[in-house]
Image (cartoon, rainbow, N blue to C red; front, side, top):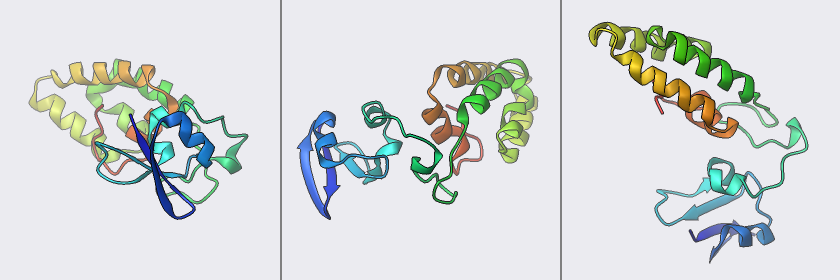
Length: 152
């Protein structure tokens, strides 16, 4: 994939993801590639986060949607717990209540009742996916999303 980056206020590219590093790529760099609807911060693109050196601590983490600068997310513990809850009690929406998506929890209960429990199959798959995704993916897809009922 060929990327573009905003460098010193100018659009530069196309280039490979490795070439972006020479333009000071950091989690807050604005990037774009063909197929993306708009420019986005690099920390929202998993392929770019893989090549960046890890942050030294909470003060260097990128800002998270709806949180103040310097906010550090400990998604690892939440990811594992939510994944296990989705596998064991997914039909009751417990994983959504745990990650503070109350509306999603109630919708899951309603969908489980309407589908006579078949909705639990989706929550089982969701739990497995939660356990296999990275912390950054989990953070983006489940914690810091505007969706009331994030599934996958």
